[in-house]
Image (tube, rainbow, N blue to C red; front, side, top):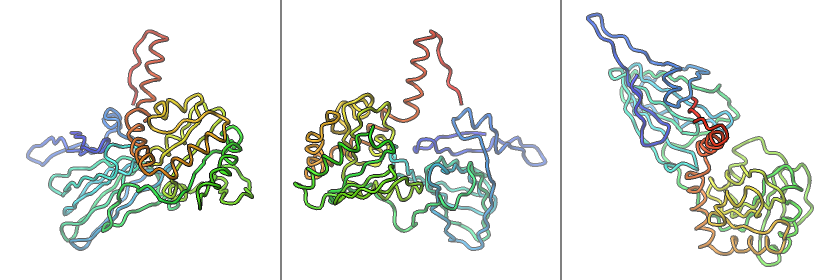
Length: 336
């Protein structure tokens, strides 16, 4: 097989390497070793086919939310399609960008679609058939979609003075400090609201809504979209993954200056830092983000760039390999 990466990182066009003779040709269409060598998911959970009776038939755009996100290997076995994928990874440099590839029965080219991409196609001929090999089982509760005639646009910063906190360990993550700070915010910012995800408790405080544990990623995504500011005022924080997730969504962030948070927020260049346990300083920082459009817009733009440039799992793996090498003296080989 011949693997060609597209301009959307992780998405590949895969051409056949044909062995031809007078009988026709033979070609391999899938190989776990070759897929792994290119960094592609080598597991196939399900295989599906679709028949399209009429030219112009539309399918998609479909995807599954994490943790049931799926890869796809799409091929046209009869007729022809225009296959389209959209990058839905907020941390990606090509977030919401797309490519279109023509697949047909003659070229037998396949398109590899990574996780967290929307996928769809239009049949270009009557009687067009396609085959999908997918890397995750179909999960109706995780199913998502985009309308073909309403392309997505980057998240716009909301005007609502809404604050979001996510964390199950409410005390360690500075929840009480946040409640104290929010009381000060409400006195100076009309209509301020605070959404708290994680702890299973009711908050009898005006403007505060507790959601408990949220299992539906779509509900959580809606909270991110409605947030003007994300706050993680931890008293102790080994590594604030939820802060990275908020930054990837393009939400201006505030974090306390403890353990990993200053590094994640690029020492204050990608988010505001406040002293741990200081409700007054936290309130001032929140008020700045809720009322200063220029500051909030600047941090909203910097967050996704910071994640893409320094905080992806590839960067984490590189740091671990460097640490191991420094201890052992032996270079660490990349593993699929």
